[in-house]
Image (tube, rainbow, N blue to C red; front, side):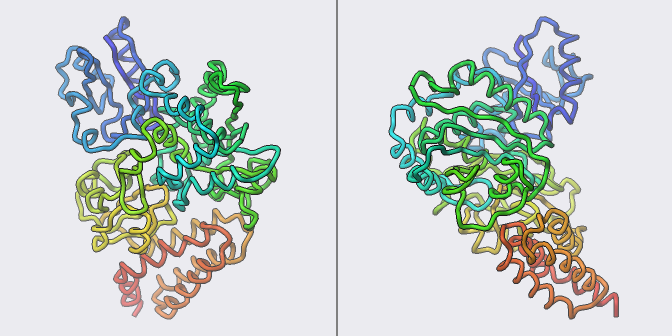
Length: 502
């Protein structure tokens, strides 16, 4: 008997280890394979039993369910996992292997298409590799949506004795967990993507900057790098090609601002994590002053798919200038939270109401914050907005890392606006005045509004404009998005306090 149980952090937090212990005690002869998560967090721990080559799911499993799972009589039986609506509706490209394979088995990785992209890339020139990424339309999945191929071209064209690939795995946005899930569930795809990037731009060294709050991801990635090096995937002679690329895992100390690429580079160099003024761009003067590609986990982990299936096949998915797939992370007050990968172009309302199933509380949805703590609060009137970078920008929002936090109608939006300013004040690196001082003044101004001072509203709008235009990085520059979207779309939450004061 072959049984699959996730070793993903979310599954472990929900009792996966206890279920595994019960399974081993009840069926010592069974082969238990630890995998990543399928992304259906409301069903974790999800136990899958292979029957005639088909994996049947049971969940959310508890130790007391083990007997029924083993004999097939459990009331928590879900049927074939691939036939579940959540799985069938997805376009799984980047996450195709997550939840399917043993994350640390390179043989399992190869058996499911791994390394096909790298082998193709090794037969190409650096410029051909860069051109393939350009054709795919891949854009940064970490926040700004900058075209990945253009960044790679800049580093490729730079003349320097040493170049670097840096993976930004400092996933600090609320309601985001795609990077963690990928690293815990399919680490070799990130290693493969970074290796292709290195060969493409002429970099021989890479670093994964991984937040210290992800101990499981750190452990899996560290072991995966060791396996990759031992198997010749990393080192001076990648897969016998004569080309060199190696990499290391580095832990960050947990500063939110180190998700910004220049702060990350300072931290990686052992300096204080503060924002650097640009120019120079990191693509020209990045890590240790050398040309550096800085890309998000999902961006780099998508590269092997592009080279395996072809750039045009990837570009055929999507909407407008948003090509390929988006990894939606659905969280907050939602009935079905989890990760859902689909082509760009799905509407916000479909994500919240159909995929997420509305609120867990059963009350009406009031707002959805898309893009982490710096994202705008989208009201019901914006639910027809299609998931695309330009489409969201036109609606006054941003996709960011594609995390969605759902709120019901009991939420105080003035309180949420205050939280955004307070978050910025706490997490600011202090380098620039609009962010360092502006966020503190923002909290004070919102407190005045809460006490019924309506004259403070224009002051808040003016302050947000200053922060947006004058901040050195997105922390101060994007904080006005949640603040002003709360003021604009939910005026009653601000006016009601004025009326109470009167």
